[in-house]
Each structure stands twice: as structure tokens, then as C-alpha cells.
Image (cartoon, rainbow, N blue to C red):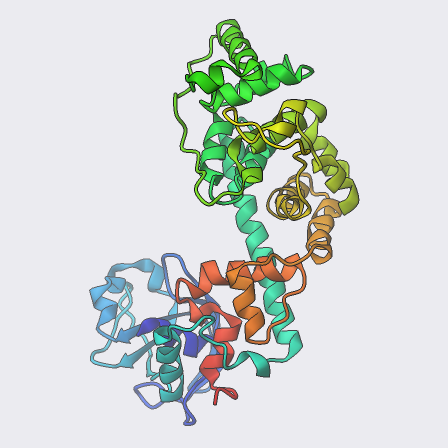
Length: 429
């Protein structure tokens, strides 16, 4: 398997015997080069000593030497700088496009590494590398989690960049769309993002000082003012919102909202109903006229939390939806919900905007805030805690979510530093 050979070559996990070419020339690996995941040779800028001569160039790796021809490398000028061709099975000689012969070396994956890799891929336990974790030095764990946290921030930054392109690079609009998605808290995330993408922001801005009209925009565009039955007909507030939305539709020539939306209610606590979350967003949009700018200026977690500790209009203090009243209680955003909003919206935007503005203070804040927030409590973080890994801050939990999604679920153990330790066989038994 080529991936295992890449791994062995990259980490210099060679068999305990001298390396040599098929012609008997000794090979000394000074630097295996940089792994290339795009088109072209597998490793760039390797530094090798072959037969006493120092070479700097590229390395190509295959399971069988004949794969060189099967992949058409003999016709590709990009492979003219290959200084060594490595294969587990040497079944032919290989040539460059310029006619030169390529030195070859047979390299096998050590049995212990292959066996450990098979164990990782076959195990049903999670995390699959649990046996190695208690033996890892704290520095190894910390450095890998730090790298994973940065990787997760960079991926979220890429998503923000893609949204910016769709919204004419309006940071305020994109921030609100992202915030709306995260107000769905997973189950309704797609529905909230789709809803926010239909909002006529410039029209709403003209009525931002009127909470009733902001709610009319929000609930109308969500398709939640199309419920025609005895309960809604008898609800004065519902009827008022409906009248306002009809007026705003005519004023701004808005396309009628869909009669139904893909809102999910199953297994949701009433406080998480879409109606309540929309009411909270409407109140936030009404009270914070420059929400994105305010958040970027807030330099402490307490300041950020005060911005998002939003409430609702009085109607929602006694309702979870339009059909049924409830005991009066303020519908404020809870502390756990606040922290999730900061983790999934505020921190990525601090990092993305910091990069955009070349503002190190914003990027530093994006790195500092997760260290000050509690770790997320879910089945993934609990699984790592159960095998002895400390999960105390949001920085830890975000790193482990990245590890699960981009490595464990994809069986990318060869790219994982925990997997590297496991494959080496260090204290696995």
C-alpha cells in the first residue's frame, strides 16, 4: 500500500539494514523531502547521498515499479527531476521523459508498522489509539492539539471566505448569517442558514429601530406567518406580525416566503424552538446596530458575552410558539449557548478578520478566548476523557472535534501524531 510507504519514507522508519539502489549503490537519506499531495512527484526537495554523490531533487514512490509506466510518468516532464524511485516490488527499470534512467530502491514496510496500522483500521473502539495515549509525553499531546486547533480555525476561515464571496464581501451580513446558522445549534443549523440567506438585509436596516417590524421580517421570511388556524387567528401578536409582514412585502417587493420551512422540533427543549431563537436574533439585530463591529472591538470574554446575552420582546416571555402560551419567563440566551456561539462564530471571525486586516491582536484574541472557555461536553470529548486525555478548555474540545472529523472518521491515522506513535509500536502492549 503506497500510503504506508509514504509514511515509512517520510518518518525514516527504515528496516535495520543498509539502504541501497538496485545497482548496489549505498543510499543515505539526509532529508526525505516535503510530501506533495497535488499533481507531480510524491516528495519535493529531498536530499540524498547516492553512491557518495549528494543529490537534491524529487522522490516518487509506488507499490510496484511498473506503476511508473502505468501512471504515464515516462511521458511527463514533471518527473525529470526525480532522483530516486522507490517501490516495494521492483519489476522493471524506469525512464524519465528526457530518456534518462531513474535510480531505484526497494523499500518494504516493516511488519510491526503494517500490523499496527491494520489494528487501527479494524478496531471498533473509539478512539482507536486509546492504548498509546497514557504513554504520550504531555508536550506531544499539547503540540498536536494546538496544531489541530489552528487547523480547525483555518477551515472555518475558509468557510467564512466562501460566504463573503456570496455576500459581496459584506462582513456584517456574513457575520449574521454565520451567527444564525450557529443559533440552530446543530439540528436546525442548515434551516437557519438558509433562512438568513433569504433575508433582505438592506430593507430590514431601514426598520431596524422597530422591533415589531424586525420580527415581522424574520418570522415572515421563515415561513412562520403562514400558519392559518384558530389558534393563530385568535393571537393578536401573531396577527400584528402578519399585517406588518404583508405591508413590508409590498413596500420592498419581496417574494412570498415559503409556507413551510425545514424547521426541526423533535427532541428539542422548548427553549430551543426555532420561534424562540428567531425572537432572540430579532432582539439582538434590533439592539446591536453594528453587531460585527461591536464584537470585533470587544477585547474580553465578558464584553462579548454581554453583547450576546440577548432577550426577546415581551410576547415571547409567555410563549414558545404562536399556538400555545406558557408560564412567564425571560427567554435569555443561556451560558452554555453563549459559549457555543463564541466558539463557533466569534472566535473564527476574530481569526478571519485578523488575517484579513493583518491585525495580530485579533488573531491573538482568537487564540486566547478558547483557553478561557469551558470544554464542550459531548460524546466525542467524553470518549477522549475516558481514555485519560485531559479535556479542560474549549481549545482542547475544538482540537478533538477536528481530530475526530478529519482524521479518526476518515481513518487518516497516517497523518495523525497519535497514530504515528501507535504505528511505531511504542508501549502499545
